[in-house]
Amino acid sequence: MQDIKHKMAINHIDIEERIQRACDQASRNRKDIELIAVSKRQDPERIQKSLENGVRCFGENQVQEALARWQPIKALYPDLCLHLIGSLQSNKAADAVSLFDVIHTIDREKIAKVISLEMKKQNKQLPCFIQVNTGYESQKSGIEPRFAADFVKLCMNDYALPIVGFMCIPPANEDASPHFAFLNKLASKAGLKLLSMGMSADFEDAIRLGSTHIRVGSALFGDRTS
Image (tube, rainbow, N blue to C red; front, top):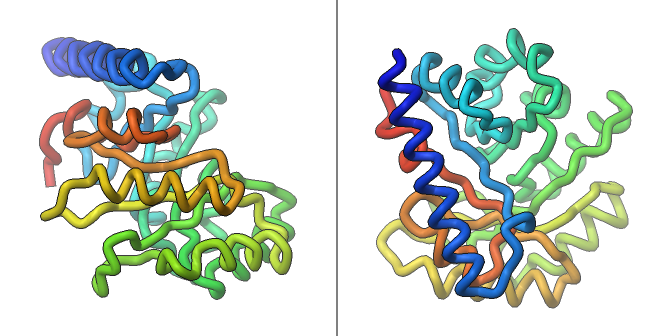
């Protein structure tokens, strides 16, 4: 068990050093980058070791899995911050608003509406990102880029959602950098300051291209156990 904790601590140090180098190259402040540890389908022991190593910001893809994992221990870590980074179904909206602190995947009006209703019902205001499908992939969630600016206005004006930025997942078989640069320009035009982009393989490029939230899983935890 100590070996796992030690290995993950080394991974965390390595990631922090890489983040700092990317920030230095881009003349950015490390404090402006949020490292989200992607804990989906990870072994509970690895999650516990990461908590012991001081990690407090985690990302989950599925609401039910996140509920089972975090609900029992969330009260033990008052500084824990949970990010929903996977697609959201409307029937999971109540649980999502109850458990998570940030939602990265607002991608259609139906979800905007139900999340808005749940926030009012639960008297909560969660920062939200709009997911943009920069690669126009039919199998992937996200609003098309040409509709992104108008969708921001709809979410904020009609549903009073606290939209803070854009999120993207570039196509797996393409260079991610052009997608990051494109999303940065799109956010600037829409008046948004935050960008959720960059994962284990490309977070340094994402930082250089303006990312404020990077989602790192395997580089921190190792390969998933299931």
